[in-house]
Image (tube, rainbow, N blue to C red; front, top):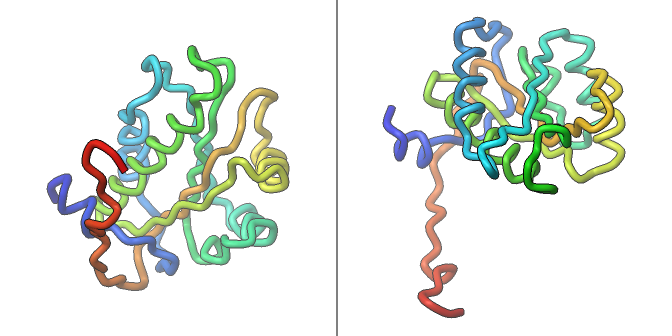
Length: 169
């Protein structure tokens, strides 16, 4: 699958089979994440992999939009580390780019995935940080639920020419 095809056909997948994602595919997801651009190339991220069923279910208990975690076989928590950033307050942008790369790499490998926002919600930050034992100065940015898709989503038309402005608004 080429890059444009991956971008245009990727959909948020919220239903998964029970099949586990193989370690080699997980490594590819993480490699893709770590190839994301970052401010000053500091790469201020860490990734926590969750496969434990009880932990995945707990995320669904406290995150209001995470019901799909009860079906996912993998969650990747994308975290920003204050100690690794050269330019203050850029880690959310860096982690967003890493999250998008995970979504595209999942789709390119035939997996389904969906982005669940954590940052800047203080309650989600606290609950998830406790669940995965994050050290001080490390912030959970997003959770990516991953698995083999048990649903197909159609590709809508999203291009809106009226949202494009040339030179000025």
